[in-house]
Length: 162
Image (cartoon, rainbow, N blue to C red; front, side, top):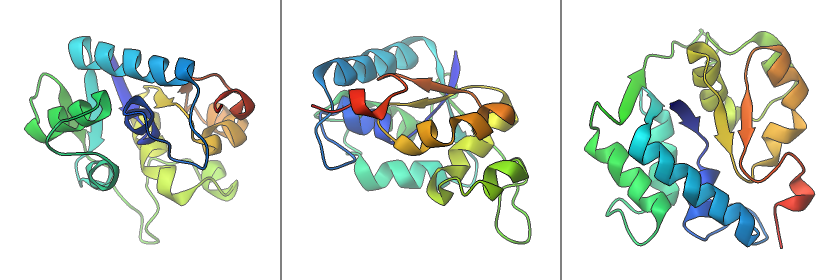
């Protein structure tokens, strides 16, 4: 199992929110369960330039504790080739990712999430999301352009928070 993981997944697994509300316990448990499975049997995909890792660094503890999301980040820092795969993502002259389909850009998809979408699309693997509504709001254009999203907490943002 190879996956691209949006930053909100380890944040939710840690018991924190990336928004104004607390995720439901079911949402948190789904995030913890997914990360545990990925760390045990999967491979985390990152961009070679380090943009995804840099975003993780902003929200997660590099000591790997106290949460499952922090342990996920520590695994990335240890960069074991059996757990982490770094993929080159080229950029165009305008700064957009070459592997991000133009209709996704034209739809106004969140610029901070484009690195995840470009990587998932290039590698043909799903992006995993817990509580970032951008993935739900632009799901049609993402799917139409070969970018699949796995929603750990369901596709309806109204179900994500207490």
